[in-house]
Length: 76
Image (cartoon, rainbow, N blue to C red; front, side, top):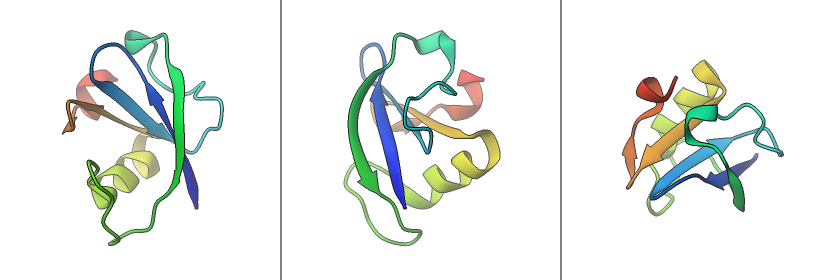
């Protein structure tokens, strides 16, 4: 399944299944589209812990990182 990566300020990135990123937290807006990638549980993706990312998307609707460190729960 394809997921959408958006860039926020600095080294903040958001990953979501929402193509326009409208569900990403306003706290890190403005978000700009970065790229679309397929994610599969257990499959490695450089710079991203896929299982952690998919868990966050399932739970919160998005996954947020700052310099490749998960900050999803603090971004809510």
